[in-house]
Length: 333
Image (cartoon, rainbow, N blue to C red):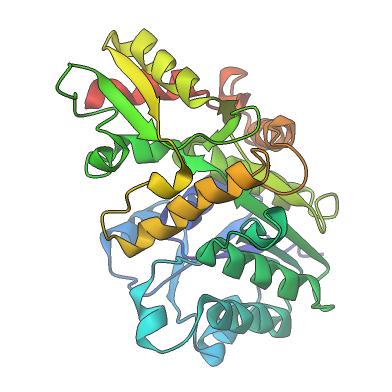
């Protein structure tokens, strides 16, 4: 009897999340990977080809394109780029794209569907705060839950990207930390407080997300209907700067704003949801993922399951801490 290797199709495979998931899955010979992209000839696409991926062009607004993209797929991972300018250019919404993708995956016979979702900001704040992108993702999640053709549906909600700290252009928005010293010589992290116990969830996209999602595909029945907290480490903003100072020896400090409304978006539309995020977490007692407090035990279990499947070392089975991330990446700055 011929055994067919399960094919997992990744939508948004050249983006941060999709790329991390594709790269993790490509390490496992038990899976085949189809990477969906608008530009199969891009450097990012060709890098996936060199790692063994099948790359296919697809348009998330075109159901026929997506039916072809999902054809023969055992599983699918979908992340939609909320900042994709083509969404507004077409006069449509993120939910419109999500609905088209979900419908196509179901019709194509995808058995195990994993979607990168977002928190229900309206419910968490009693209707006071709305994170537009996150709310759209949550609404797509609810739509996918109502599709009875999937064998399983699983969801991951991603935390604050540790990789954001490596982007020098973002630093001035947060007071200069960890790249630009202030007039007093400190690398000052300026942001609203998180709320609750000040337990902020952080995630390394490049080092942990892909393995966490692969862990969901390794045992999809177990994670059916669940929302996984996409989290590598949990700590306060004060902890972040102290860990950075410990690793680099550079004077650092956290300077909280008086309110989340005081967060300056500098007219950048994409930062409006960041501002609303602080409003949501302050209004929900520090909760980001939902009614339950942030936790990383689930992510650790999934990471370890993947590591074991790939024969990785014991060290590689651990999640990335804020300290270890700075230790690995700050020398390159």
